[in-house]
Length: 423
View 1 (cartoon, one colour):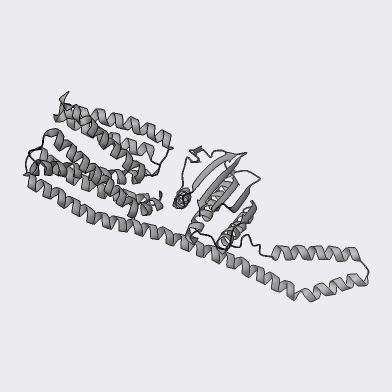
View 2 (tube, rainbow, N blue to C red):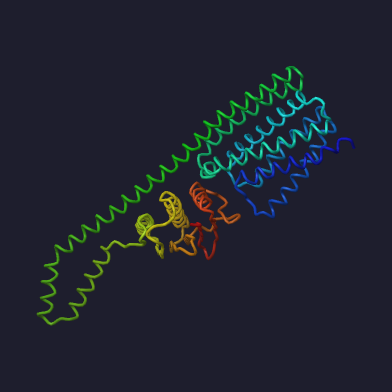
């Protein structure tokens, strides 16, 4: 029973893990289910932690490994991130946690040898928790926007970053082994942990610079995509101008034809001729979908793609000329939404295919609703497709950036997507 003083400290540690994971990752579940899973995790953590303090030795090492696995499984369960990104964040956090735990423990033993075991335990526990929460605050202030903006893209690079985090963890684990074997003096162990922390800080500076580069790379791709939209729109305008030039050139012939019908007093022929001419002019006209140039360019380009694919295309757009949304974010959102809708129609295998997109501003919110014909095999989970593509990850990233949401539904053989941005 003398070991029960560890229980409140284990509760504090488990609570710290839950808080860090809640703020570090994108949530898969609502708050209610997250709290339930957190309670289950904390109960198992406290049980295994107390067991490790009671048994010691090899059994304690096994309990320690189970605690690490339990934390990783909890993180994977509640997070929507890709697996490689989960591994990177877990190894980074757990590596920091173990470095602080061991270095603070060594310093307490070295500089405060008069402390009782419970006092030392709680001193280390409180200092470690405060340090981790401080690092979490710095992460949310300086790094979380960069990390989250990447969504699930570049998974191969996340594996590279996870490997770096694993190397640091193995390095500090080897120092822990030396400590357990009492092979090195405590002062040198503390210096070793300090050196690992400094090197880790320097390397992670490079890591996050790499992440920033990944973000700029993805934004550059969106800028190139916008250039393609503008080029396509320019091509449409050039074709329309050529058609209008031809119509103006043929105007004299049209007048002569109408004059001949008038001489013959053939009103029906005149009306039929004007009808054909009006249709020809309508086909040559360039339709403007929106007063916002970026929105209009994207809608126009996909109108052409839908027409070439034999897909009915309906747009209802009511937005301002200027929107409080970055141009590259509009491209990422609207371009990926229409690209996915186009692919959904083409892969549906159905005869009648259509895309309907409604865009409007409502109470400082930009609402985009897109309905498209979809395959019968499309499955949803948690309001998103089960097979989440890079395009959908990009949509999620933009919606999250503006504090909005993204929701998928399947109704009457159509996929309905609602994207909301808070402006």
